[in-house]
Image (cartoon, rainbow, N blue to C red; front, top):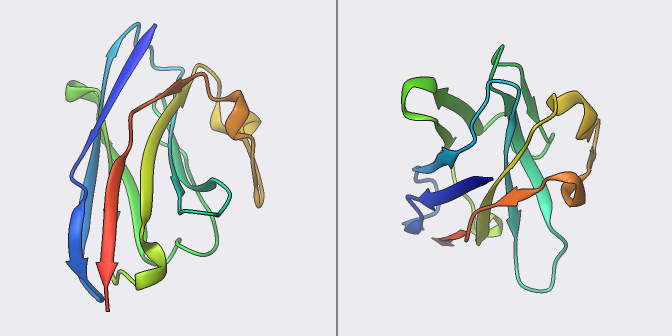
Length: 130
């Protein structure tokens, strides 16, 4: 079992930045893909960024790759999502997810197989005001 706890959400003005954190605990192994998703009201869940802990390979969806960066602190079993140049359309609930597979089996171009992520955090709200 893996437990995930997100933090760092909040309200920010358009153009601002936030850093989300996802602290993992439990049966943590290096062969784990950590990812960030978001879901706005009335919209489908959207994959944003993923990182394979063992080798640091990262994946991004095109809409955020120039503004968001995923990183990790392996000593703390924590993954971060650094978000810059935030826009009102970034307003959503942000979720951390994990699965014991290489990310390449969970992300295929623009397709993010979110049902295949077994572990999820409770989410943290990000609100961007214009």
